[in-house]
Figure 1 (cartoon, rainbow, N blue to C red):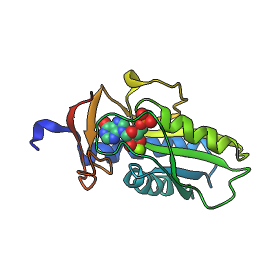
Figure 2 (cartoon, protein in one colour; figure 1 turned 180 degrees about the vertical axis):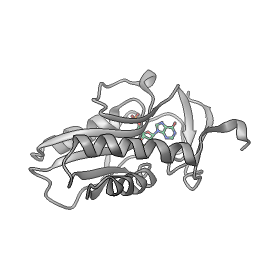
Figure 3 (cartoon, rainbow, N blue to C red; figure 1 turned 60 degrees about the horizontal axis):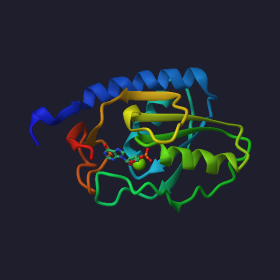
Length: 176
Ligand code: IMP
Ligand code: MG
């Protein structure tokens, strides 16, 4: 990978997450329950929760695992639940966090599932948003960066399980 593939540097991501945490801390309860979607969001959630802590919040953390892309650049279009939240979340304010929102199917699936469980409210947060790829309408409350229709990796996000360990985000190809 050469530097020309660099989309967002480590510093750029950190600065944006600090700003996002400011917006979230202002708009949500101090003990907001973050529900991260695995695996892609784990690095983002880890940094976001600490940025929220620095803003005076004390978030709780849970994760839900949804089916992945497999080894392709295009989603199968079907979402499956691979791992659920172990605790009762009724009456809680949820911040649903994903790495990227692409077609919107994963987020729509997670929202529907959480709503069935009597949560008080759900707000959504994604580090990256690709609105040009949307197939299902989903409400986006907090977005790190809006990007073009390119396939990205790094910062927890994979391409065929590679590049999750990169501290920055790169473009690995044109989607489709
Ligand atoms: P959606 O259900 O189509 O919105 O897809 C969401 C999921 O697809 C994200 O949580 C990512 O895990 C994955 N995804 C979407 N775009 C990319 C990408 O550019 N690189 C890596 N994974 C992606
Ligand atoms: Mg994901």
